[in-house]
Amino acid sequence: MTIEIESLSIEAIIGILDFERVTPQRVSIDISASYEYRDEKFINYADIISLVEGEVISQKFELLEEALLALKRLIISSYPNIDRLYIKISKPDIIENATVSLSDLWTR
Image (cartoon, rainbow, N blue to C red; front, side, top):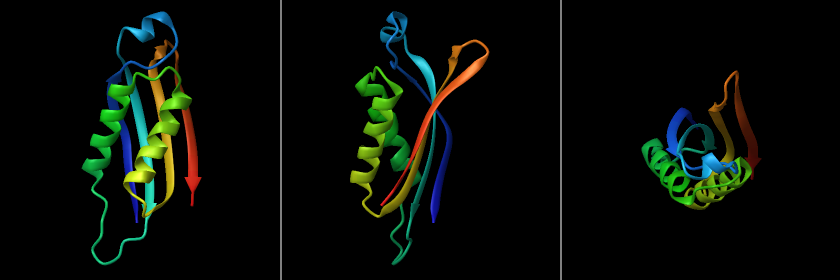
């Protein structure tokens, strides 16, 4: 099974520019998490969303790289049955004519 969370929109402090350290900006997060479903043990996508929102809002990351690695650690430790995890974090409003993103894929 694969849970797909697309375009999770969060207002958060994230970035290294002066204005990014004081003014929340919109970030968009995509997550794809694969796991083996058996014995009716499922992963609740709403719980993953709550975890991600809490982490991104509370940590005030400077770099997208830091946020991506923190989310990976959090999700993998919370759900050890996930065997493949893809995360993409985008800043759709930071540049007028582009969306800036960072992504990575992990497998066990």
